[in-house]
Length: 143
Image 1 (cartoon, rainbow, N blue to C red):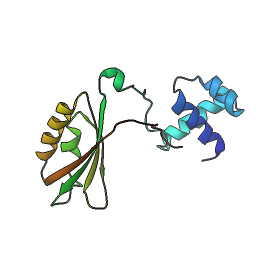
Image 2: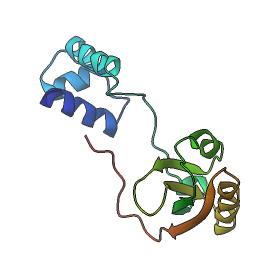
Image 3: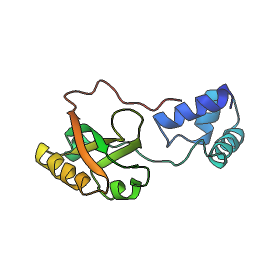
């Protein structure tokens, strides 16, 4: 991957609706060449999907929490059970004192409590520790 690919990725992350002509102009390529670059990035799995970024607060999801999940067993097989809880935005198996790190978004702390109850129903979960976000400075995807 070269600097042109990195620039194309950055431009698409900023606005995935940009035309290939606009992308090509930004990196000094024809629209066809820009299209071919993007196609190859998709083929190689660098670009996994094209989506939109949603303002969660505008949807009423104003509570963000990071939840450390403790376990007395290996949690590497619990991905499907955690994915079944719709308010969990991210789930990561981690090294350290906890087994899994969750990013949860809800509209109220009462709903966060419901999510935690459902997490406790997942096999192997022995405890949780939560940190509720008070303010977000920024969120970004690195290229």
